[in-house]
Image: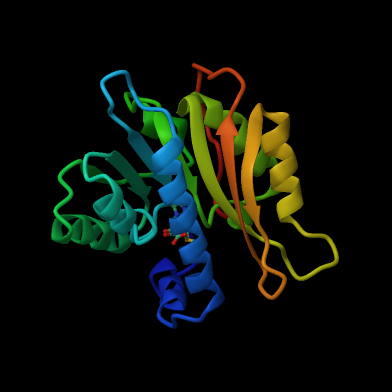
Length: 211
Ligand SMILES: C[S@@+](CC[C@H](N)C(=O)[O-])C[C@H]1O[C@@H](n2cnc3c(N)ncnc32)[C@H](O)[C@@H]1O
């Protein structure tokens, strides 16, 4: 991991930054996902956030919406993971686990039960096209039937909006689009897709490596 991801999180400091605006969209979509995603027959809802950062997108929403949500946040940077753990504790969320682990490695998910809501925010812009395809293709192995994925991707600076590729991959791998937010005055994009096709059971090898 070459980049200083703690420093990257300072993009959230200014409330009007593009990152802060993106955060509001992710939180809005997450509220909707928590209200509409499936649950286990007993009513349990599981959330998985890969490359979770300091968890600021999911933790306040869980606290406000449903404190019983069982959340697993997977983050490689121990400083950010510790912040996420502290925030979860401050918010009184005992059903949140923060794991310092490689979210790009299939073994990390051994024994992890399928998620009803999965966040992949800040991932696809940092991995190449092959890994993006591999990761989207792997998501049905991490999800419960009908599970919802919230993802982000910057459009890039060129003529082609790079998030369109990610949207197409979701469509190709059995997902239905629930929403796609693409502000005309910012480069971030936020997609929300529901798994409409079958879940997968096998997950092996590497899904992605940050460039
Ligand atoms: C662009 S940030 C996004 C953080 C958070 N999801 C958000 O949107 O605020 C990418 C995060 O992925 C983490 N990361 C990079 N490679 C990872 C890996 N292989 N497994 C888990 N986390 C990773 C970084 O430490 C960083 O916190």
